[in-house]
Image (cartoon, rainbow, N blue to C red):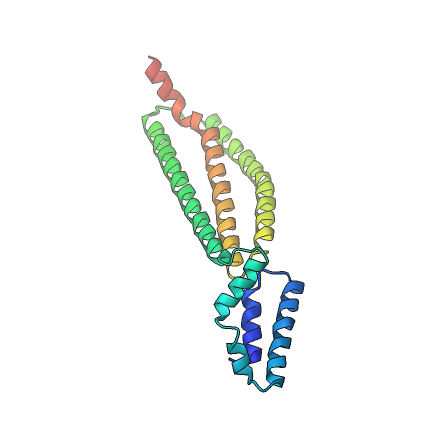
Length: 200
């Protein structure tokens, strides 16, 4: 391996360090290689004297009190976030499914006398609810924007994946919130008579 390739790979391995620290280290190794070349070694021989690039980068990171396996830890943390997200989605889907089935059953069992007034009441409530949900989207938008801004600081391509997952989670929570609000607003129209029947 020649000097240029060695220094490039070493800099990539040390990307967790600040730019200033990386430059200092790279310049130090560059000077050492050039010194050895001046004394008759080839670039390849000078680079080979440092041993394994993997081991060298680990030793440098340890000297800076950084866990050399930070990238593996990051990978495990990412997998953990994905798994938690999947579990959250599954639980949300189960609750939504259960709630929908209950509402459908209530509707089937209700003997509601639908009048024109009731229909207009439902329409007016639906319009008000849509406006309220539009306003409710604003804080969700800011939370989504804040999260994507934070995840942009992660390493590529992890940052893209995290941003997509974050947007999906926030959209899913907003969707669930909309469903819950709709059910709270309209459930009385489907279940009030069922309760009356049970009382009788």
